[in-house]
Image (cartoon, rainbow, N blue to C red; front, side, top):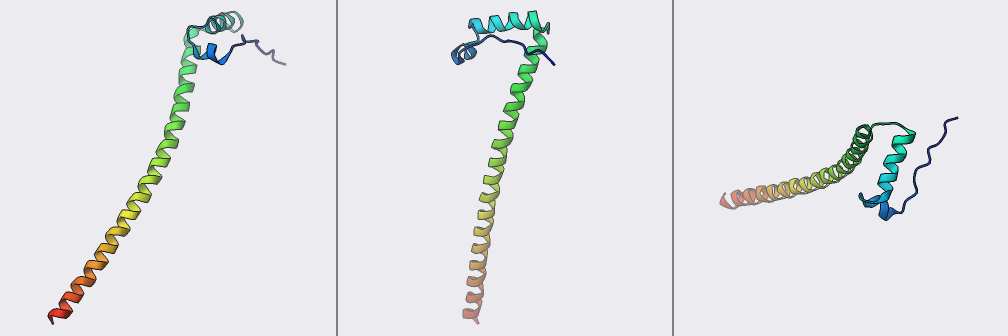
Length: 98
């Protein structure tokens, strides 16, 4: 069974403040317990944030594409309605002319 690492406890304000003692104690804890270089940890965190941002952007993109498809479908229908109306007017015009 794998032993779980005890990380330092922190308030959300300490986590959000990159200058807080929480981050210093976490760095020391990681160095002592895990012996993982900082660059690997920082790169992993950065990749995690990039992945989350990518998921958010995908969600936004999906919503934007849906909005545009609906908009252009309405535009297409409006154009068809105008064309139908104009065709009827042209037919009526020629009927009157004859």
